[in-house]
Image 1 (tube, rainbow, N blue to C red):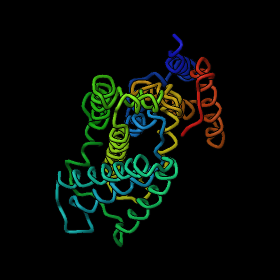
Image 2: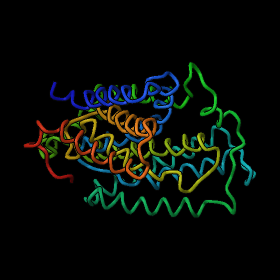
Image 3: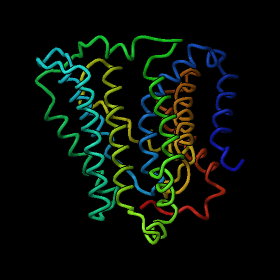
Length: 313
């Protein structure tokens, strides 16, 4: 029951908004909430693997645009002559994976703070995205790729189903593999894990590589949504991704939480924004209201852990 705070907060929010505006619980609006949650969920899933180890990855708003631009100039587009098809997706994913792995190597092997390493990588990858951006904005001409966001099945796009499938796979990796289990152990007591003879650095690099790859995927999915390459495609992804994890109960100090917790946090954030729009809240006050709700939700969900919570590494 102690970890049910985020779900209770989500349900309470739904009840409040439903009482204020009947349209909030309509099928169309619930579908809109799921569509809005798809890309943030992919980011939050990747971020969870890093946070449970007590580390943090701030490079998301650079990695996502880099993957977005690589995808948009290598798939059929209006600017370059390249048309690698699915190969463009593979290249963009590989770029995210490589950046994430590099983050992990610098952090784990050079013993640099993850906050500093990934902050620098954010700037580097954002600069690379701007450098790769052609003279004019590339419009994606591959109908099958753009159709991932446009075509609906049972009212939902392929992006939502992809996010759901990723969540299932990530949950299995988190609970059924050494990578997931040792990740929690590292976050709880890294020194003890090292004493047990575990090569901690391998699991740290693995977590960052997963995070980088999924952040790159978020940039690719954003390209499908907007239909163009944009070096600012990652803007606004970082804070909701981290906030969603924390709201859901994944501690910044590591050792607690998980993928499902972070997904609940994503739904809390997306539902809050949708509800504020549906109820006609003043746009100038929406950010302030979101901030207050985030503080209250995090305090409520981590109150019982306040004696164990440590400062982020």
